[in-house]
Amino acid sequence: MLLIRCPYCEEERPELEFRHAGEAHVARSPDIAAISDEDFEKFFFIRSNPKGVVFERWRHVHGCGRFFNAARNTVTDKFLTTYKAGEKKPAIAEASK
Image: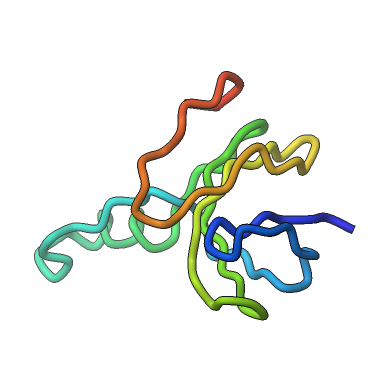
């Protein structure tokens, strides 16, 4: 079983308590109604899917209920670090660009 550390609860819990919530650090347009259809599609549907380290949003649904970010290696499925939502992306040596 995979264990994920919640940065708010400050403990590792089984993966069944969490839900993946997509790519982290995606910038939202300040005026979403004014963007083109192509940019709207890119924002909502087109995401990177690199092999290696990715930055993701997760939610501790069966715990504190809060969203947080995580750096995870998609090859090994290992969580490298988790950090609170709103914090800057940490520098990870093996991170993808």
